[in-house]
Figure (spheres, rainbow, N blue to C red):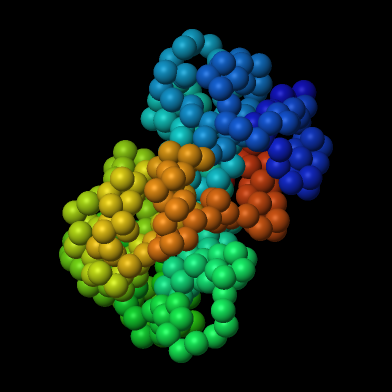
Length: 317
């Protein structure tokens, strides 16, 4: 029977569906695979379901020529932890789970926008610490989102879902920067450059894929171009934002605030960020809804099923 490894526990519905089709092993730990575990996975299983943090690099694939495994059915839309070019050269098929994560990730972007702009994190900490002395007219004055301009960096599925929520839900103006003009169902202005976008908006939302092409895309120059009252929101990948430059921009009030669901060296979050009041910090929960994680998992099962039936998986990358 075809042997499949899930590198982390997935929802029970997903594990049951996979176990009905394959000889399934579920690794019980939640930490990423070690180098030795990755090599063993490729040697001992026909298919592997990796996820964020399982760093399948070119060196892993090059360690030998005759791996047993033929498919990496990634759990997640992002796959920058897999060197896809090296995987393909070694004869592997790589798949992902697009679509399932779009709305959930957009919802978390809106959560961060509201929390950062309205200083909700500061307010909750004030109440929890027992220091709240009651309502008064100038307490925790934040920024109202209605009518403001949001800039979307990367107008793909998730970027468009965020923009729709901003436009139709909050009456915000939409600007964006992407490699090409997009056919959109709402009014939006495409900016010629990232710097022009950063300078023009009240909220800058990062929604690009991870990878070498977007590493430190949001750097000191971009942050320095933003308006002092503006907020940065990152729901993409942590290393898209130059973390040291962001810490400096927040500490020196070059920007008003930030909302982060991802971090450059996660799970390590610098103490400088953890002690700042003008940044909202979430533990990478962009897709953390049961229905969403089940949908993602079922997509990995379908990708595996198609591959081992001799068909092209529906979500090959």
